[in-house]
Length: 386
Image (cartoon, rainbow, N blue to C red; front, side, top):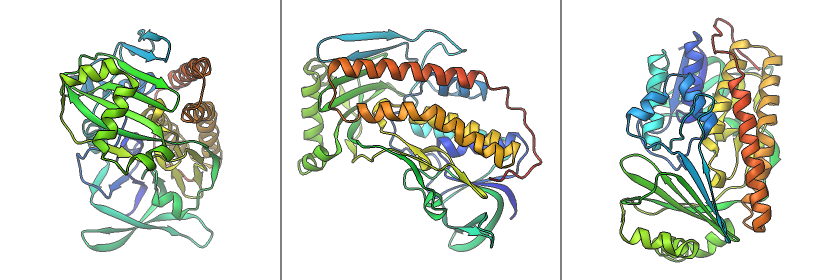
């Protein structure tokens, strides 16, 4: 097999990148070690930038048709008061959505396959193939027990936080965060919520995110170090105790609701921005850029960078990849720094509100940058290489 691009990881970032490259005419292989249609840890929340892109890619209608509830406001519950922010129609986006990942990833993978991508699950990528000059020229995989090499003009690592590709190419860290929050979460039905809700107190936070099938994702966050201490206790007990601590009135609402899935957890990980490309390789999604999930911006990051990277690959040349790196960094750095400070959970209320206003302003700047991109009408052939 000889392809133009191998994308490792078939979640949000990888499937979107593969789809866009195939629509440009590239021969693309998309592989994932997992199984098709599985769920994964996620905040689910799509911000305006992500929805703008889904609409432009012709996929937002699928999210809506699946019964994903529209979100028309966001309420921030601070220690002394609350603020509700309406979602105003802008840039073709009239509401926000928070689809379950099994639905969203399924839609993206199917769109990639319809665009001509060769999609294969259950494929384990062992290593990258490196030429004598140091250029990455493909991957070594194990599929159905057989080891083989797949040559490619470019290898894209979209394989998540613990990316094999990032490790094999020794992508250096450009920025490192100082803080990390751990998360406990589950899904509830019977919660009367039609908006994003975020609660904040020094040392802890909580969120409620309506998603598919009448369920609401309810999560609680605390510093990762505190979580390591708390996990000695039963996770469900800690989860419910933290919910009541954050909002007794919301905890009372849950007494009349049903917890429909087990309580799950994420121990936290400090954020980073890594070098995003090199000779014959590139990174996208959490493989190259991860920030604390407390600001629920990860999927929006993934879609944004998938399109920026696809454009760079199709355009080709070192200059195009330098532009990808610069655009990704310029649109990410302030969002990263604000998120890292929020994740400290050690702010004053006034400071937190200031951080939220700054984050909102950066998201608006991000939307303007995405809206300004010309329609993705680039076409192959041209072997994109860093």
